[in-house]
Structure formats: structure tokens, C-alpha cells
Image (tube, rainbow, N blue to C red):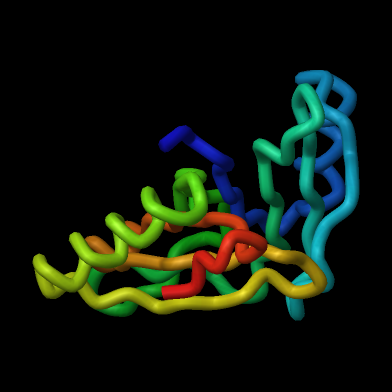
Length: 134
């Protein structure tokens, strides 16, 4: 398993994209057609930063609205398809950990999301090409 990407939610999508592209040196690249606007930024041919347009303010504990500010939405780990993926799904079941499964639009990948606590999400992603669906 390896760290796959970090997703940042921001109300300044273009400014954040320019920072990572022009200052950090990442390259813009293709992104699946998700329902929300965003950009994927690449390092060494891999999309390591996923930017997502903030569509509503972050919520503070107790339901109060925070200022709309960039935040890390989730951390994703890439899991090898096949045996490693199936073992992960079996461990989730054995520990009774609920998860949400989704296919990445226009790709051959599947995502598995686990909410560890309010506001703490981990994504595990693999290729569908090797029959990795849970």
C-alpha cells in the first residue's frame, strides 16, 4: 500500500491550482468527470493533489458555519488489485467497519471510503481491471 493522493477543498479553486502549478511545480492533467468542479495536479506522472471546489462552508462542531477555507478533505491510499484488495475488504468485514464503494467515472478504478470520525475520511483505491470490486 502507498499514499495515493490528498484532496483539498477550496473556495479559490483557480488560485489554489495556480499555487500548486506555478509555485510548487506540479503539472495540471486529466481528471474524471465528477459532478463537482476541480483539478488534478501531477508529480512524476501521478495525480497527487486533487482540488475540489468548495460548494458550501465547512461546519464547526455543533453545526455552526465556519469561514469557507481550504481544508484537507481526505487522504487516499492505493492498494494493489487482486489479493491485497480482497484481503483489505475481508479485514473491513471482520472488524465490522462500514464503508462506501464508488467507481471513478470514466476510469477502471474503484474507491472505498471509510469515515473514521466526523470529518475524518480515508479513501482506499484500486484498479477494477483485475476484478477488484468488493
